[in-house]
Image (cartoon, rainbow, N blue to C red; front, side, top):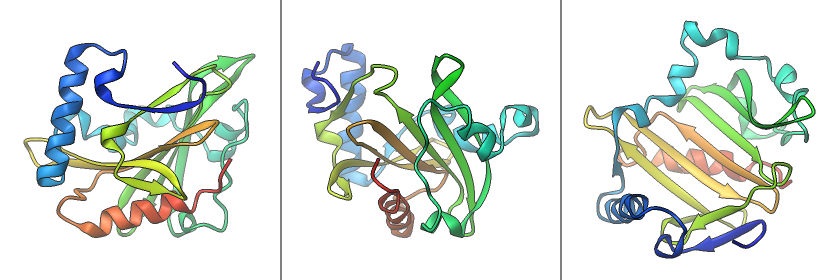
Length: 197
């Protein structure tokens, strides 16, 4: 695998056939109907973190940012200011007591709760393979994936994923972007407002 970020067809990725089949299904469903079918557990990930039983895992943004190896993207003066910052948590790999990844949670009037996950894959010596067939957008000239995942109950999560030379970003909203084009446009607006690292 190449260093940094590479764009590779799912057919050529070193993953089990089951995952290749799932990716092929997602590509076809997005093209045909604008969303992919997923399990219920795959769409209830944001609001679950905000449940009272998990409140001890939520940190203030400053607490979380101080636990990172590298400084996270500065979102001051961006459309993220329109939302209420609910908190953050850290994850990823640990290097001398510091973490590589941060997830921030915001509440917006139009989108509800939004999660921004920022992954420092260089510090953890990781590599990113972007699936060529899922690229359908761009974030400031960087190839990006916009996906809408919907469960049988109708619950949904829409997301934008992209990777720079040093970080991977995913922006999630528990909204059905296949039913409301405004969700996609708003997520892309937020994504494109994040300063390049």
